[in-house]
Amino acid sequence: MKEVDFIIHIAAETRQNLLNYTDYRKINYDAVVNLFSQADHVEKFLFVSTANTLGFGNEKNFGDEDSREISF
Image (cartoon, rainbow, N blue to C red; front, side, top):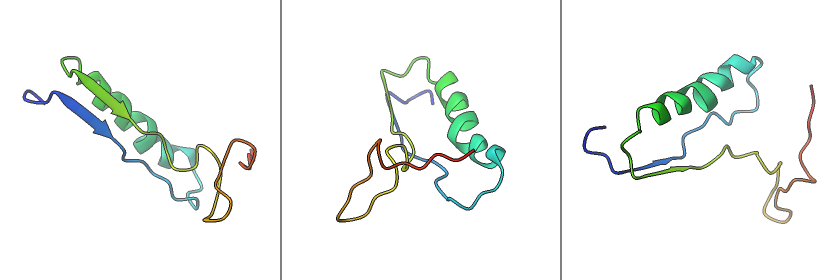
């Protein structure tokens, strides 16, 4: 990243069928931390969060904070 001035990071694991949190963590956390730690000279770093942050939605009813289903 010697010649990089700007980073736009939109990659994420969004599949809903992964059974283990570590499958999400490798992409959605570890990879971001690694990328960010190497971007100390980058002027701008734009990070777009994963698709289901605001809950599930469809064309008629967009997802929002009130529509997300949290299960542990």
